[in-house]
Amino acid sequence: MVKLTLRERESAQEAVRRFRKLVERSGIKKEIRVREFYEKPSETKRRAKLRAQRRARRERLLLTPPR
Image 1: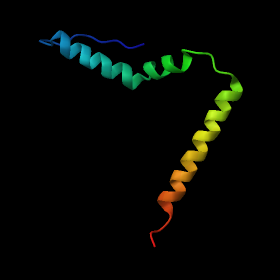
Image 2: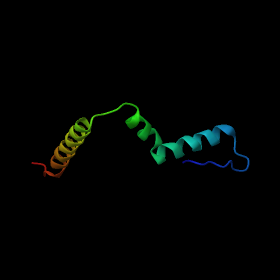
Image 3: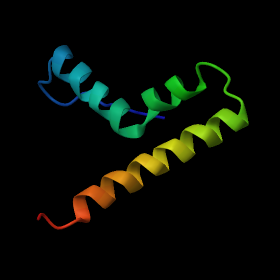
Image 4: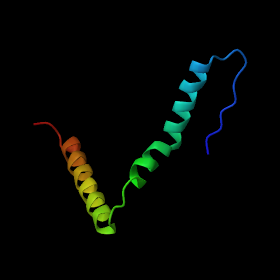
């Protein structure tokens, strides 16, 4: 849960901006996006596997010395 207390002499726009940052950092938006639609467990595993492969490929490319 994200709580925001107004600071002294803080405008509404500044408070909204601060609230957005708090929500972003807490991961609420990401969680809502994930839970928006049901995803089969096999699809979740498949996406995780693809993500791991991409990560490994990227690390392999970055670690190879230039010729």
